[in-house]
Image 1: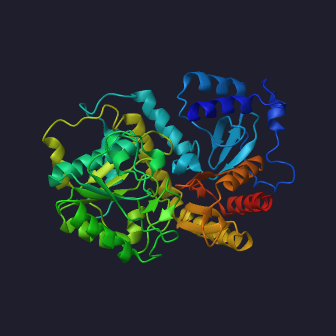
Image 2: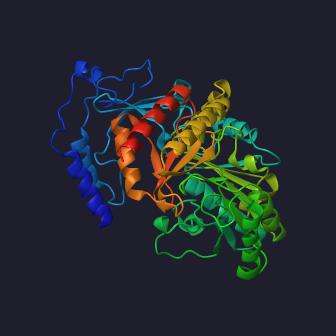
Amino acid sequence: MQRLASSRRLLRAALAPGRAHSSLSAAAVAAAPENGAGAPKMPPFAYTPPPYDGPRVAEIAQKRAQFLSPSLFHFYDRPLNIVDGKMQYLFDEDGRRYLDAFGGIATVCCGHCHPDVIEAIVNQAKKIQHSTVLYLNHAIADFAEALASKMPGDLKVVFFTNSGTEANELALMIARLYTGSHDIISLRNGYHGNAAATMGATAQSNWKFNVVQTGVHHALNPDPYRGAFGSDGEKYARDIQETIDYGTTGRVAGFISEAIQGVGGIVELAPGYLPAAYDMVRKAGGLCIADEVQAGVARTGSHFWGFEGQGVIPDIVTMAKGIGNGIPIGAVVTTPEIAKVLTRRSYFNTFGGNPVSTAAGHAVLKVLEKEKLQENAFVVGSYLKEKLNALKEKHDIIGDVRGKGLLLGVELVTDRQKKTPAKAEIAQVMNHMKDMGVLVGKGGFFGNVFRVTPPLCFSKEDSDYMIEVMDIALSKL
């Protein structure tokens, strides 16, 4: 009923008075304002989208309410109809430009409609869109080789999937098969997907349905802001050993975690946590799984993979989102020895390794290298984080600024001492920012954390604009 009410609210918002529902002329699109009255000037950008003559907000909202799942929700009081995108910018049905500081939930890494990625997709689609991995095709092999070259140690064997959930499901199954154990340890506040095993590993009630979820233990989250031990990673890791000692037979299948929790609110694990946790898990016979769906693929800037920031090498790495720049693709990378467990039966994925998807993924890696986007994520991300911390000094509602590179979180609280989540206030600020032309995400267990995960082509000028808009929006509270 709650989701159905959400769909009805969407429809009412789309039909609210003052909305123009007819298509605009090319002149009207070209003249569409880029930001609201009194807003700062958006950085110049040499692209104007073609006039949009498709369905408008009201029509789409009506169809969505009628034909799509009532579980779907949307940001903003009045939903956006995004019809065009180029690099770090998005455009709505009226041709209005928005700075995208969310990147399709940390998915668009090279930039929207990057020409090199689009060219690779089109060229491959013209040859063959789909065959099957039962036949040979160079696209999947070339991308697997390129991806393996970005991995440390003996992580050289790649299994392709369609999403991060699928990748994590496969990783958990591999760990259980290889070790002969069933128990998995994950972290509270973590998110790993919404299928059977991954929902079990996810540790937020917001994302868990009342279905059977067995064999998973949720350890204390090493959260430097809200956790009991601050930034002392080794103290948090003691709970891993206690979980093994008191919650299992003493042997486990594996441990899965993100290096920086994405859905959980961009929570960077306390320093020293993963080395200590990995050591305990391996002594109990388990494999260590790094979920890099959001933190991976150059986003943290300092390293290509999030786990590298803690100085560890996992046994299995999962990824999705950024490796396709918006194309649905996921992957599991492990060692040749561990990979052999899937030969005990037949493992098959119809679309995993699709030629178009892998051609896109390979193009993404080339663009990241060619345009030095990892370096840009580090330089611009560090600059943006410094600016966000300056905002924290000005606005008491900002309780914490955290993250690395272009994977940043800004937690809003109504009381800094009590750390009371500012759930209503964040929605107001998001709406004000949208009205001034900036789109950000939100997350965290309480829904009070800005998720700043833009395309990695984001610039210092974009950062300045976002900061100025956020400053104005916060001042309106």
